[in-house]
Length: 57
Image (cartoon, rainbow, N blue to C red; front, side, top):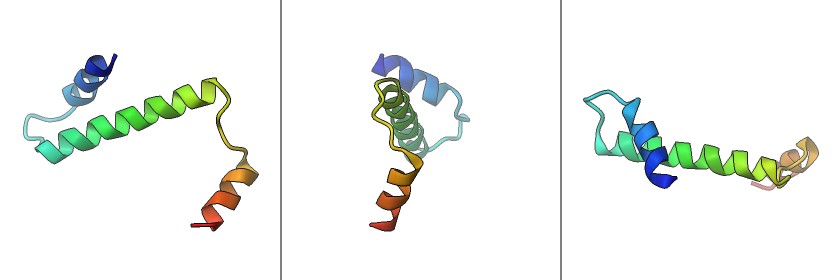
């Protein structure tokens, strides 16, 4: 699964992409997938919980 995600994320980049661009694309894709999985098992925050957490930053 990870290999497929990496390939999908990097296939959309231009040929001139830097190593940093590649790492950012992979990291972003993995974070999105993690968020999707979390929402499937109801680990998401309510709006109120999110606002409270942001205020603590």
